[in-house]
Length: 356
Image (cartoon, rainbow, N blue to C red; front, side, top):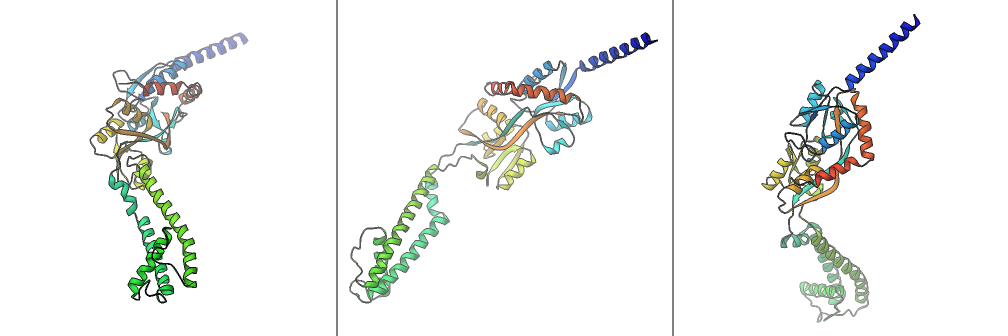
């Protein structure tokens, strides 16, 4: 009786193991979506994602077949419907998507970059700072101060020495202003010099004040000229998107960020569409994931464009699974191992440097 029980137990265990082995070797239905260089839609899928998934599938000893999707949204729907076991691609991890699907451990960290035409500064662009409200306010304030000081010189000196200034208020104040100007510019008194004690006291005070003012004013002009010479019209930051048309993927967070700085987002389906809009001058710049943008920029007609990376909107890519998928744990372990070994970075670098 005991022997029969042992045989039955061994048979049950063997059957369970065989059943598990059969389940594990079932070919996976893998959805794939995205844009180059992550996914290149040839007859046989190529790119970063197929290379990465090949490594993972080999390590977990699973066969698979691909099912291609035109967009991540279509692939997500297929995942939730149970049509595929997982969806692979450059899929941005976010809270909205995580409500209906399960994400793998991030396999790649990225950001957005800006691609824009290189624009040279014109002569007017160099002069424009001198017509800014701040600069004009400073000039008006200086003229007011000179007028006040000139009037004081005329009141203290002009009435006692009308031959040197003038009895007429306009001419007298004008002479006082002239005295204030030549004193401020350290040219010297010229035709006029204070002779009364109050006049000399005013002159001494004005010499000190005007020295500080002149130094500050010259420093301000120098700063304006320096900033003007270093200023660029080429779009390189989010702050320069005001009033511009920007081609970008249809991520709500990115679209809102462009609107918040006064730009007009132009949603696109892929990076090639964005690049073509830029070539046709239908948009002023492209704001897109850095890897696809860098790849298309290196392979397309260069024109006179500049690619800027400034840690804009960091993002994380992951694979999508149905909720509570037992496969996710296996894939997570492989992703972590491949990241630790820098193999994913090597795959990305190899494809970015690959010419079409």
